[in-house]
Image 1: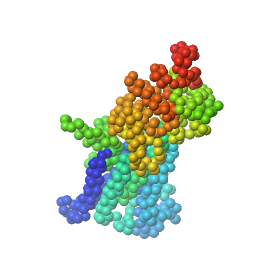
Image 2: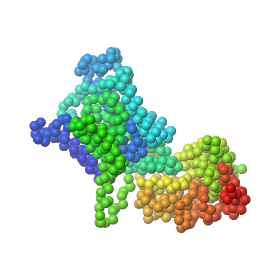
Image 3: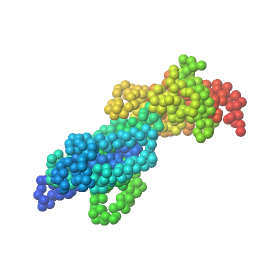
Image 4: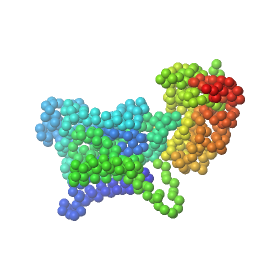
Length: 367
Length: 248
């Protein structure tokens, strides 16, 4: 997780997104280098996944909390922005109801449930994107870490958490569109979502938010707080006998990570155009852990790399050989675990050390 | 019976695990500035005693009083550590991915809350304190190395250094010379005596030669209680001690 790796990653993410956006916007559709809008949104989706991956790496790589339910925070962020987008539809819905979203009219509801109030306001919705995942993580983490639940047990409860939310959001009575979720969005902040320029802007926003998230995460893990966190990950009892409270450290980083995942989810929904309960499915959370393992756990940059590469593979496979995708994903995870315990980034880092002769290798900076 | 110069006072402490009495009405008084060696066969309750003092295990009954009138049985590990009780584990336990310097920096007495460590910058004063400890534990040339790359003996010293950085009034040291070479054992005895000039120390040890070298009052534990107490010559002459160690 050296500084050069972070800088390279930031340049690639920001530069890549800018390039795609410009090639989409500035060139006519028949130009050879024109980037179709579909690709722009796909890239934006990858970057929002990368935000989830960085969030997972922050807790798993640096605090040893293997969360198998992080997609829950991602989905909650997505639902929060989705509710705003639903209210923006207004009278343009199928039933033309100015207040109630279509699915509520369809269910014969007469008034807006209390928890839908305020979501017509963009600022309120954005606060909720941060607050809802953050609060859930705060309550969940407070209970779990205070009781010193860790390791496999914690992983299982996180999995149960996302599964419980999956079941809850499936229910029509919950008021979040049930099985179908929220979709058919028209515009965001008054700008039509279907415009190419909006798509390009959202891709750029995803790149900027990912960059900011990476910088915050890097600051946290390289600060003295981060050193304590790594100490907690490896030798929790030692930190306790030194007077640190591991639960406070875990809780802070868990909440921060959940908020980051929520922001990723909001950007995801803006670009994918739908949020439904399947986003809570345990498999999604596990996939996010695989992205991090492939890129390199505990490196942050590796999480971005893993998320983008694995999803490129997924896009290709699910198009060309859809029935093979899950096998490929499983094989990838096994191979990475067996052959590349430090992920792709670990591979890149190992190479210079093996270089023959030359001056003595410089001592590795503390990580 | 508590004098003003009593630092730690255990009174009738009993701990049982599933019916097994690990500590059986154990009583012990430690003076301020004293160094005490605790010996005893395996299962005598030495480590459990440390667990009780440091808050890892809550006793079923009995009192553990630190300083004037602090009841340790009501506090958890971080709270007891902040009061000034440091603990060294049997197996050297340091933060392996961090440098020797960072290990000591994290151990330095100071604000432990996330809201502080998140923004903390190393101050000149902190640097001087780490530097001084590096000299004491003889690891000055190794300051930039990963703690995980140190030898077994060096890790033991680093851990002792981390306890010093905590600035405790009382140091609990569990088998500090296990697995050390003779030269390292010698240096460790010296190091502990140096620490004892300003702090109280309790050393749990199996190595009788090492205990003799320390030359301090010895408490012999057996089946969760104190069997004998006194100088090393006194306890080695005690027939009950001889029986426990050699008999059966």
